[in-house]
Length: 407
Image: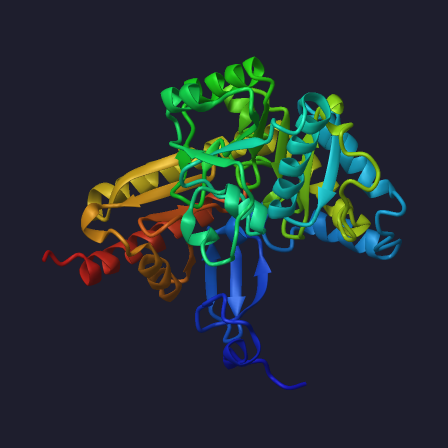
């Protein structure tokens, strides 16, 4: 068999991505090896996807067992794994019913379409405004990228869907002044991820719930990244004590396989009648079987308490690195979704930090140009945390020496 090389990326792939010059070929737990046998500690989690580590034995077993039963039946039929997962996720949350798709963007697309259809059915065609927030991120479809509050993702694709308003995040006054009877939905991330790991204020979230109730609008929480144990709660809304009408999630739900979910109250979900929305691959039995196993592991006191404990170790270590190196001005986030905000003199260089990390055997992420993001597996061993922090500090020192010269 012909050996695959990194050059193939440039030769055969649309140039949307710029991966590093090595190719990962094996993963186990929080460790990854490339073609040359070099080892890395992964505290990126595949962008918060590998919730239980690479090749988790229990997930591999669930995948293998289902692979020998049935893979795909389309939405013309239901399946046991899909129904088990629907029951598990609704039993554990505010919701009554679920819709499964293939990604976070698809889950948000479904949520936004449902919000508009619900408003149309109950209040008429004039109630169609969607309120989102500046710097938010909700996916890459034309609808979700338009609802997201970052122009860099939505410009250049022609006319955008109308009746979408972007307000400042965590600004109660702005929301109070703008929301009206025309508003059909308010969508927010409990923690804005792609824009820098910015948590919602508790009072802001509570006020959003209150205003949505007042104006008969649906409150939609985008928990694509914050869900499935990432914050130390099964879903982040539970930490705030505020229930949405619709919630979306994806990323860590199946521990590495592609799946998205939109869950909601029955009275809202009833606006999605046969033929109104659909998906070919969503709810695939193979993926649902793995997601059901993953969620059964995540939604335990052992796992969720473990996330909070590991979070404490990361925050303690990262704050110490901040003080020793001067590279960061703030460490923020919740659970194992952590943003390391670069000091002003390093602004714009988060990508350079990530690239230096590769040389030291470390996978991290960016969350915008000024924040280094950490989102490891929820069960990362403590010895791997210690080693990851050592490699992180070495990277920070090299980064400081290379990019920290004063003008």
